[in-house]
Image 1 (cartoon, rainbow, N blue to C red):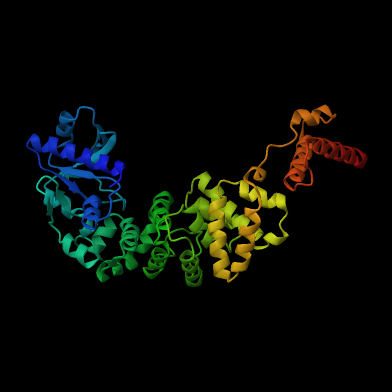
Image 2: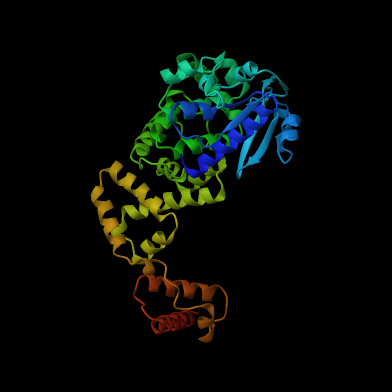
Length: 413
């Protein structure tokens, strides 16, 4: 267990002990229980209790009420933020995302309101026992993703559960049981009513994971490829190609921009930007995806790429990820020699030579009689490009070229 995970575990234990000392029921709940039973390290620990939010705050005066409607309080301990939720039962879901109202209930009602049986388990860390009201342990042992109760009802309540189920199945290597899978195929169209931001949050997690190719194939098997984004290519041939490309990416967790770019290599830049906007990627994520898609065609003909252009690509912080993407592209196209040649060429460029400080500044250009403006900027760009190409190697050489460019422009005018 890492130091961070040790702290979040100790924080949750301290909260549970404090609640128990005051006569309340308190358990670990949800995904952290599932992961511990699978010998996986939970990213966080959630606490479920019969104490109301007011009672929790009376025990932890500095606790923050973050979900008054849902009975959720955040308690800070040992530098960690732990969510403490009161046992509840949910009312109707009129928007396909969240219940219109909730009422505090029993632990059994709280377990039955959850999405999948393997997420409906509680764990008593004091007595070291699992509390299972919904058959979650049997499904955990069998490697099955099954909704709690009627799958049509569970997915109608919260449409995003369909994507969550697919992501969870691929992350854990589980199967979605047939009735739940059939319900996803029937109800997948309702994902179109979910905000693109929420869709992307699920897809982002799926693409980050080492199981990304299996996840993308499962989405197609569940017939969800038409329901994720109106801009995303959804035909079966495109998805088969996407899965093949994803299989050739590194077998490690990576940023979601690389897998997304891998699937969009055949799209033009305007189309790529439209897809990124439709999925509501952040500006930073979209910039990376566009950088990748724009750069791969350049790397495919890197033997004809000027030194300056290669250095400009290498200077980007996302260059290591671009290499991962080009490695995938080369393997997929059966052109491993091209990859080896590019890596050899890039290795011969010293780090200091990739993005060296410019020999000249605007003041230097002004000193030879060029006024600030577009003309100055264009000359500075041309001189720096010559520096990157190593056709200009000194400051004096850069000044000479700047004067020469200025004289040439003056004659043309």
